[in-house]
Amino acid sequence: MNPWKRRQVTKEMAGTYRLLCQALDEKGVAEIMGKVERLLQTRHMASSAIEGFNVTLRSYLYVRKSVNQDFPSAKTPPVLA
Image (cartoon, rainbow, N blue to C red):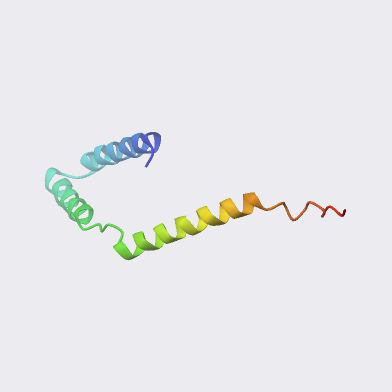
């Protein structure tokens, strides 16, 4: 996440927490925040299979890009001698 987006998300989270504190008592806020913390702790990282796929795809796209740059454009008419 880029720094500008992170700053915006942080402001939104702080504002949401403030509104939550105004709307609920301390026990209600603690209960909701506990649920949020448990959800954040259960997030999973990308599996190694997905990471392997991305590495393979990245190398394929790199080769394809370099091959496409080496060949003349299909729009260029052939030169007849």
